[in-house]
Image (cartoon, rainbow, N blue to C red; front, side, top):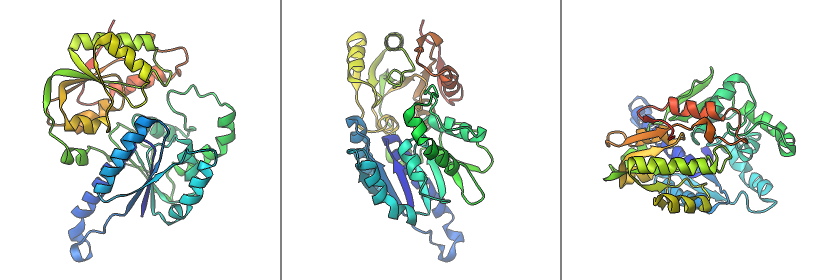
Length: 355
């Protein structure tokens, strides 16, 4: 049995893509196996449910799709009260012991890191949770502790208490002679020796959805750069207004973490129709209708949408983040990391930051 832990809709989508790709590879190799039959794939997905309503709603929809594909999905209220983490670990312990491979979507998650301390030398797969995959691979290659790119890196009391857990998880997330580590990703990564990279080209998404009907205008994709403390809210709103006016955008697909107050201000200021998607954007765009041009700031979608929308004639355009947009609280690494996200995106049109 393969046991997957997910905390976001995108993670569950990419577990689905990984299972589809693994199954397809097994079927391709079937004639060479005894009897000519591939071994059925047994995947159990544990949803470590978040608390925000948008994420929970999208996860419910993704769970339905995963069950339709033959995956077993277990919904775990992992954050439902003070005793939830210990109760969750106790309930999951038998499955952790039986699993052959552990699949995770967020190596930076404290919850996942705690679970990883219990898995021993089991093989491990990391599927995309966005651009964080790039940072995870580079930090493992450099032997650094795992820190999200938008964090300033200061250790507070909570980080100091969890330091032993994080150190143990980093060892589990690094390849060794007794453990295989696979990264299933659509991001450009330069892995260290011992990590196997499998390309995620979204074959499941392309086979199940679309091709989409195209509208005449452009659509915009929102980001949570304001909510994570990276970009100044006023600068972001001005940039959205300028891009929408220049490219004739009519809709704004909100990130699930964007605050209602910010979205209300954007709608009032720009006239954009605010869309709160019920599925990850890769599926929404593939299902359509979608604009012939999709505008985005540096984010995961500038890497994933060109793959999911391959052959549809849709242009994905990415707007750079100007240095003056960054808040004083932003990590010193933020500008460089966002530039890498944009600069390594393939099949996109580059746009300068609006003046």
